[in-house]
Amino acid sequence: MQAIRYEAQVSADHVLHIPTPDLPEGTLAEVIVLVRQRPSQSASPDWTQYFGKFARFDSVEAVNRYVAEGDLHG
Image (tube, rainbow, N blue to C red; front, top):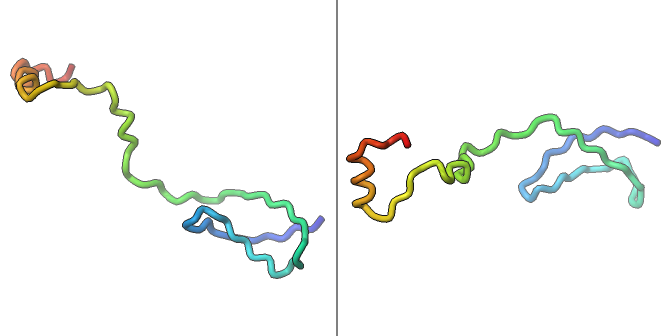
């Protein structure tokens, strides 16, 4: 068994392209991927984490009553 080290970057289509100019066509290779660094994730939070945390209202009047009662923190 021979070890060859290549460095590759995941492309926009989520495919890892590994050039193998030193290996002839038909060579059987076993690939192990070691992730060195992941790019930072987008800043948009998972909004589902807020389900059930806030009061729900059927009308503007209900919102006004809620605010007038001063019960803003549950």
